Image (tube, rainbow, N blue to C red; front, side, top):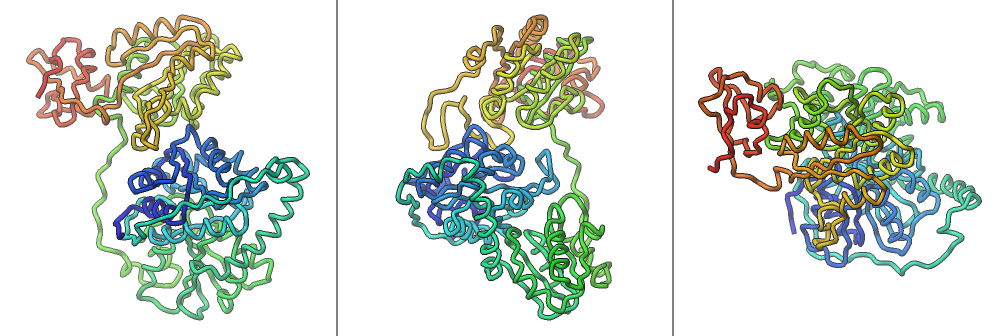
Amino acid sequence: MKEYVMGNGAIALGARQAGVSVVCGYPGTPSSEIIETIAKYPHEGMHLEWSVNEKAALEVAAATSYAGARAMVTMKQVGLNVASDPLMSLAYVGVEGGFVVVSADDPGPISSQTEQDTRRFAEFARIPVFDPATPQEAYEMIQDAFAYSEKYKTPVIFRPTTRVCHGYASISAPDTFAPVRGKGFEKDAGRFVIFPRLSYKNHGLIEERNVKIGEEFSSYRFNTAEGGPAKKAVLASGVSYMYAKEALLDHSGVKLIRIATAYPLPESFLLRELAGVEEVMCLEELSPYLEEQLLKLAGKHHLSLKVWGKLTGHVPAMGENSTEIVQKILASYLGWDSQAQENAKIPPLPARPPVLCAGCPHRASFYAVKKAMAGKKTYYCGDIGCYTLGNAMPLDMVDTCLCMGAGVTMAQGFSHIDSEGKAFAFIGDSTFFASGITGVVNAVFNEADLTICVLDNSTTAMTGHQPHPGTGRNMMGHQTQKVSIEKVLEGIGIQKIITTDPLDLAASMDAVRECADLPGVKAIIFKSPCIAIEKSKKKCHITDDCINCKLCIKETGCPALTIAEGKVTIDASLCTGCGLCSQVCPKAAIGGESHE
């Protein structure tokens, strides 16, 4: 079959063709579509799951690899932090079936907390990393990653970046596939039960193995050099290689060297291709990883080589590269006429700041807490998800946001140092299962004083509406027992739990006041479905009683409320009839919910 697919789809099809048997992950942009693509194609004999978090996903997949099956775990770069504990140990224990960890990096960052570079993690963990430049390469390279993993009995990291994940290409893939099951798990406590003595021994074996892998990578087909002998070279990786290749199409006298396997570094390949080269410009995202490796290589082998890049200020130290950025860098480096290299001026894209959707129940939840706590000293600790957007004006309801699950625990910190302030933790239903439960246990055990606000919209909204333990279905399409957030909270020991509809403003404000006045750990479950899933045909409308005070706009910030010809109006194409604005209006000038 030939399919026009996203880069994530190419990774999925490549893994399917490689015979992957088990695929686990936790949704996170830009990686989410990998598992979802596999689910769309025939996958009989495979197990797919959205795990509760990345750590759980990696551990499930590790066991299947021990049994000889090929396994893959998907996540974004910050998810690798969550999975790092088992991955570091797995690097020492080793694997049987091919085991690939897809960690999608997010230069920009476009939708992440950090710009961390997974190549550095691969070096830290002492395991190989593959760095594709295009969706087509991702399709082929993921298959190579499984083969190298099995050959050297090691987990392997696969590191696409956003533009590779979300780029498109026509991929030719066979219609049939055969999951690799292996010979089954053979008990061997001396190998699979990690002990200090075993880790010490295996550490030495890892270092020996990595030298061999580096040598084999020196002949790997995606480590390439183009342009023939030259005094100047460009060293590139990932999508930056494609930008450089495009910029160099009409220019000669420069060598383009591409590294697809950043760790272990293919030293022999580089030494061979750098013969006669005097200067190298390094183009890469995100950190100056290859630049630093090249400096080490030059020092180790006493190469007379000038190395330019991020460390010298010639390449931006943060953010994405682009065709335009690379053209300007190379124009300066190679002495081109930079004006001649510029593309036709493209008008800038209109500003589009992120905002909660019109009718989003999270807006109502935040507003209820804000109004109920008006005039009181408060701490509002946010978390990762759509509701992070509660920080925007006019809501201004997120004081902190560190990482997934941290809202619950940070609110505890504030409660311990300020007995007068009221601490609130906002957390979504998917995030609650992923990393919030531990924090709730910690709060009860350590006698914190806070109100936990679970914003339950019955989906994982920000990353594409994936199922989670509270939705009652899984990635295999099976109906499952719903895990009740209320019962989990009760089991932990929280005595006061109120479930309320955030779109009922009065009832929600009463719930907030009641919980805030009680000592200890309390919880409010603001339960209302995501508006993107349960589409509404209801609409609100402005009546003749409107005095144009604009309070509805100033208080809620709903994008369906706008000013047209100097008057407040409701954009019917956006309005969902949630009715929050009608409860805010001091003149009752916003008519109830009327159907189209």
